[in-house]
Length: 205
Figure 1 (cartoon, rainbow, N blue to C red):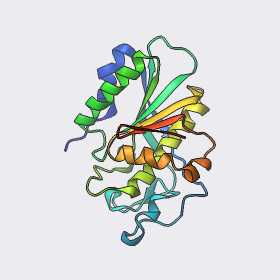
Figure 2 (cartoon, one colour; figure 1 turned 90 degrees about the horizontal axis):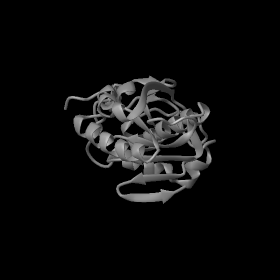
Figure 3 (cartoon, helix red, strand yellow; figure 1 turned 135 degrees about the vertical axis):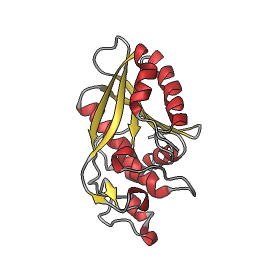
Figure 4 (cartoon, rainbow, N blue to C red; figure 1 turned 90 degrees about the vertical axis):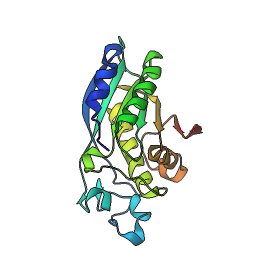
């Protein structure tokens, strides 16, 4: 499936908001993560990784500790200062055409209600096309750190109200947000989400 870049999403909703493409430093060096790289017999544990690229087949077997994520940050039209934010996480197909439509629809609702939006791309920086198939907890854990990296970026750059940042995911993105709600996992991060949304469920954290 041909992928669509976030810039198209920007053109779909820029008339109603202020949008910017950014690079978000990825963070994964936490006590709950491991140095071990991907192998077929440790794929679930290696999801809890300290590496941006951790050797999974989907990323061509490459290993890279540090790097950046791609994201589009959209603020409500006319907003100044810090605002509430929600991070949108795509599914196993990445930012495909269908996901772009989903992101556009969700973003409009939030922006119309004064909530900023981050459309986060976990796959393009890793040269991943898709991770579809059986339930993929490896990528669920990997992408949970993507969401936390975006959370830190919003707070450190004084874009978001620190106590009002949310995350919503579809498909594999929904798996990632369920991982975020795990108390042991969330307790090791400096910043926390107000709530996570995935598969029509809400989990307070």
